[in-house]
Amino acid sequence: MKLAMFGGSFNPIHIGHLALADAVCTELGYDKVAFVPTFISPFKLNSVLPEPKHRLNMIELAIRNATEKFFCEDHEIVEKGVSYTIDTVSYIYEKYKDELEGKIGLLIGSDLVKSFLMWKDADKILETTDVIIGNRPFLTDLEIKIIPDFPHKKLNNIALQISSSLIRQSIEEKKSWRYLVPEAVYEYIITNGLYEKNR
Image 1 (cartoon, one colour):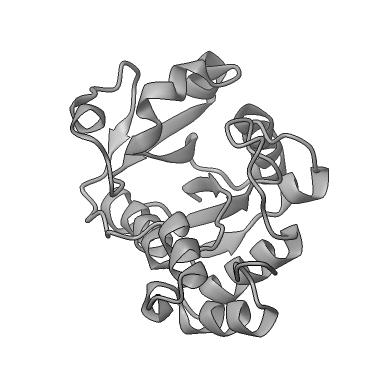
Image 2: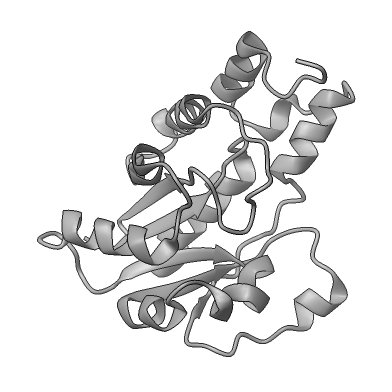
């Protein structure tokens, strides 16, 4: 099994996330993509996130009718605390090592290229995974020109002009956002009143 992991806050998960994961399978031939929601990102220590159960539920709803190639791995949520990629890579390797074909693929957005080598144990991450860089929207001209100074695989995916922060802002400002997320995720957000201002 060729397995890739896709970490993030998924706050909320949206169709851009699903399209990026699909590109990993379509372009690079991965059999499975594990969505790994972070409990607390070391780069977003001051971020306010909804309860982990909500983000987990939204991921499950988003992938339920998408493809059998997607699944959710809740390790970082269960462990709590700050989530470091190297720890999750080690966990996933131990859990699936008898099924793995080659290294685990580590999917990151092109917006993270400039900071990647500052991640905890970045050298070990590079030894134990195949880093996959996907195109992300809303990059500055400078970010677009950055050439990764480490081994990687590059996706040629379409960078949909969607972000979780844009969706949250649209909800707060009562703008249209319904079709930026899967229908089940839209219904979940509405039912639970997530991201509404002053809630």
